[in-house]
Length: 452
View 1: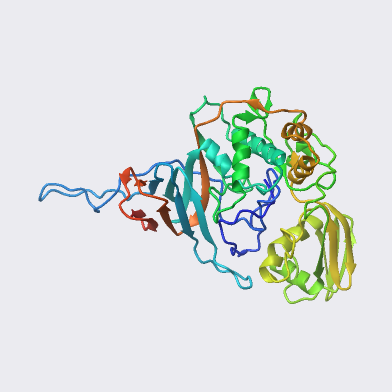
View 2 (view 1 turned 180 degrees about the vertical axis):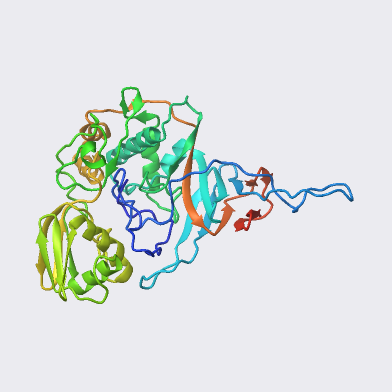
C-alpha cells in the first residue's frame, strides 16, 4: 500500500529469472514508502494454523511381534514467544538461477511477539504465519517514517486499522480472534513486526497507534476500505477509475497540493539506448544483440527502431520492462535516487535527448485514497488527524468499533530453513517448554523437522 523504503527485514537480491515483473508495488492500495523496488517472496496466501503431533520415531510403538504402523510426519511447528518477549527469526531462501549482475542471495530477518507457525508447503518450502495481538500488529506496520508529525502518524494508524478490518471481513465481538489472515507486503499493508535493527523513533508510531486505539472509519456500520498511497500527480482518483470497482462515496477524487516534500513529487530519468535495448531484450520485446538507434514518442506509446527492426510499445509495457530489468542488469546506475526506476505512469514528458530516452513525471502509487506525503504536508500546516482523514475519505471521521483480540499475518514464504531465537526463557515449541536457545525448522521429504 505504500512506497516507503522501510521494509528492511528482508535483504534484497531476488532477481528476475523469467522476464516477468517481480511484485506489484501498489497494486491494491498505495502507500508511501514501504514498498521498495522489489518485494520478495512474501505472499498473501495463508494456511490454517495447526501442527501435527511431534514424531520421534518412524513407527508407532507396539507389543513385540505386532506389526507397526507408520506415523505421518508433521507438516507444521508452532512457536510461542516467552511472556512479554519475542522471537528473532532468521529465514533462508533457496538459490535461484538469475541473469542479474552481482545478485545478492536474499535472507529474512525479523522479530515478532506472539506465536509463529512454520508450515511446509506442497513445494517443500516453508511459510511463516504469526499470530499477534491486533494492536501489536498495528504497532508493527511500517508504512511511513516514525519521525513524521504526530497528526500524520495518527491518520495513518486509523487508516491502517480500518483497512485491516475491512479487507479481512472482520465482524466479530471485541476481543475475539480474527481468523482470516492478512499478508505482510504492500499488496496488503507492510508489516515488519518489532523493528530490526532498533529504530529510536519507533516509539512515536507506537504512541500514534495507542492514542487512536479502537478508532475506525466506518461506512454505514462497516469499516471502510481505506486504501492509501505515497505521492500524487496533483489529485487523487476515484476507486472505479483505478480498480474497476463500483464507485465508493468515500473514495472520491480530491486535489492534492501538500505532497511536494516527497522525493517522487516530480521525477525524471534517462535511459541510454544501449541500456534500453538490454532491458527490452531481457523482457523479450526486442531482438537480443540488436542496437536501438531511435525512439519516437507516439502519445501513450513509443516506437523503437534499429537495425531494420521497428517495435511499438505502450508506455506501460516499457515502464514494466525497465523497472524489472534496469536494477537487475545495471544495478550501479538504476534505480538511482528513486525508489524504482520509473515511479509512475503519470508522465509529463517523454522525449529523446543525447541518445537516451528521457522520461519525467509525477507521483508514485495507485492514486486512490489518502496521499501519505499529502498527509505529511497537511500535518506540517497544522491539520489534525481527523481533518486529514475527512479530506481524503469523503468526510468520514474516526468512530469506535470492536477490535479483534488477535490477527494472523503471513510474513514469509518460499523459505528453506528457519531459525528462531526467543528473547528470554519461557518460550514453547508445540506446547512444550523450549529447552535450547533456538529452534531450527527445516523441511524433510515428507514433512518438516523442528528441534530446539
